[in-house]
Image 1 (cartoon, rainbow, N blue to C red):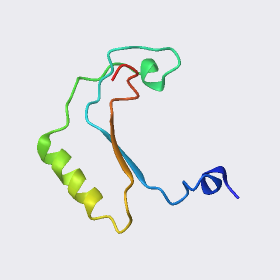
Image 2 (image 1 turned 180 degrees about the horizontal axis):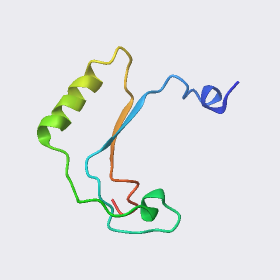
Image 3 (image 1 turned 90 degrees about the vertical axis):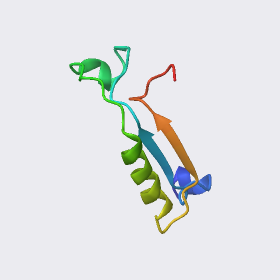
Image 4 (image 1 turned 135 degrees about the vertical axis):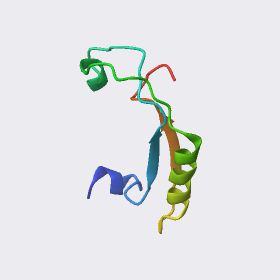
Length: 75
């Protein structure tokens, strides 16, 4: 049995939404810190709404929706 199944997490669905493609740090342990910086872009509200609509229409229960920004530790 997997750890997720043991903890009752195997059937949990979590969605993480990246709303921006920029991180203001270059941490040596982070994958993003090793890429050339991209032009900063923020997700449009229209696209954000489409994503939420898609999440809401999934045939399974979504337990958690979180926001992220390339694993930015100071968010």
